Length: 256
Image 1 (tube, rainbow, N blue to C red):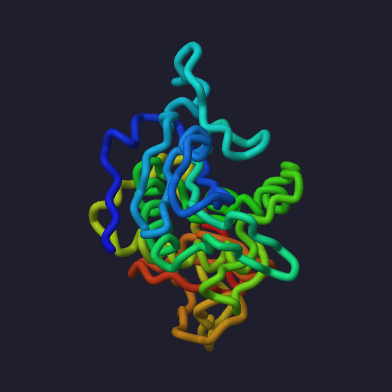
Image 2 (tube, helix red, strand yellow):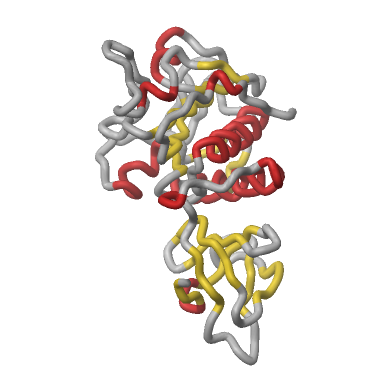
C-alpha cells in the first residue's frame, strides 16, 4: 500500500530525530494516542494525524500554551513521534504480543511514513537520528524506564532485540528513501550524512553486505565515496554514489 503524508501534517520545524513506538493499545488510535504522537499507523496501515503539530516539538516555533507530543521521556524537543497502534497487554518475556499484535501492513506503512518525514526534515538514517523507543536509552544515553518498544516483531520471530529490530527498520527506511529518488531534496548541511572514502583494500575490494557481517552482495573498489547512514558495532551502513545501501567494515573507510 502506497503511503503519503499531506503537506499540512509537516509544517516548517527544526526536527533532528524520529522516534518510532508502539502505543500499547488496540489497532485503532484512541484519544491518549492522538495526544502523545505526531503520526499514528493503525492496524490496517492507515495513517492518523496526532493532535499536536510537529512544529510544537520545536522550542523555537512552539506557540504559547500549545501542547507538544510528549512521546519520549526527556527527549521530545526536535523529535517526531511516530507510533504503530497495537500491542495491548503484550508481554516481553516470554514474548506474547497480546490481542492486538503489530502487523506487517503497519510496519510497511511506518517505514514509508518515516522515510517521507526524514526527507521533509532532512533527518539522516542513523541509529541516533531514526530509532525505536527501545533504542533511546542505549543510543542516546537518556533513561526510558525499561521501555521495550520495539524489541520483537510478531510477524518476524527471527528478528529479536532492540538493535536487530532497529537495524531492520533503518534498512527499510533507507530503501524507501532511495525509492523516493529525485523527489528527495538535499538535507541541511548540519544533517548531511558523514562521507568517507574506501581506503586500504588494494589490490582487492571491500565486501558490501546486506547486513552487519551479513551476506556479501557486492564489492567496493579503492577510492569509492560513500555516505554513512548507520552503525552497528564495527559495521557501518553506507550509501554508494549509485544509491545502493549496504554494510561494510569500518576499518577500510577514511573520512573525507
